[in-house]
Image 1 (spheres, one colour):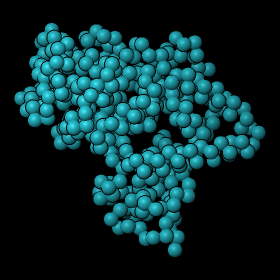
Image 2: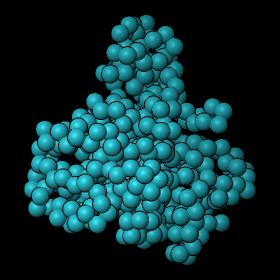
Image 3: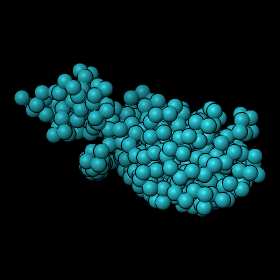
Image 4: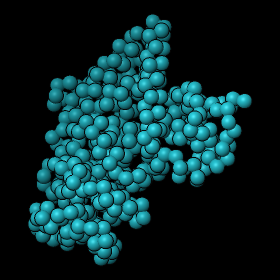
Length: 376
């Protein structure tokens, strides 16, 4: 007998995980649809399977049991304002999710073409809004999905749609304990670390301990060592995981800020070491440092290098130079990684902010004005 059930979650990844946990990996996905539930957006998936629900996987209300939670999509712990983190699917699940999104877009596009003529004016208006958001650097796929799934608002302004989109950005209020700064070479990791150290000194009156971790640490960290000496910070370079753990223990509860080489040179073993810290040590987090102007696909690719279940947040650097920060914001929304800091300039004692949505909104509008592609 065919069994059909609806599963609802905050995003397509979570809804798909719920369906698979209860109905099995071979469940047939009949429909996927984004809906508004109060002020929040949810994704509904209708799935079918001829086999009985697996008691170990799902509960009667469609929620995941502890067993299924561990065996399904992994969760990125986001801290601060995002309690549940981000469900990160296995490669096969991610492929299915992308296919479902494409099917949904095609179906919605067909519905838009056969809708009553009254839609035409609204569609033109939304097309102009999409162009402006894409001029701000937002991922076109994210923008298209948002507008195809949202009931058009007659006369809705660019500012209103931008505010709605930024409302999906997860944010973290940083509470520095053990922070590992990871990212591509040239992204501004060391400068960001020093800015955070100076901010901790000013706001909390405590002196953080700075560590450079990675092979060849002593050779690669001379500049950081000199900067720490100028700021009066304790500094140590270590090259293996046991040394790193020992230095953290010596901190005596003081904040520890850890610099690393570029993520390519850091290596899988060292990445696993620092990911392990975030899983086992309270308050430990990987700060993924990326240029504010980076393409969202590149940010997603870099984030995928970080091992499973690590606690991660974003640091967006070089905000003063970037006119198109929509890409970084798109990546934060799609990957579910909270933004912890935004920075600009090389002065270590200024230009670092714990972001709020108005700050991101203002920078997008300013960037459009600078490029002459302002919103309507």
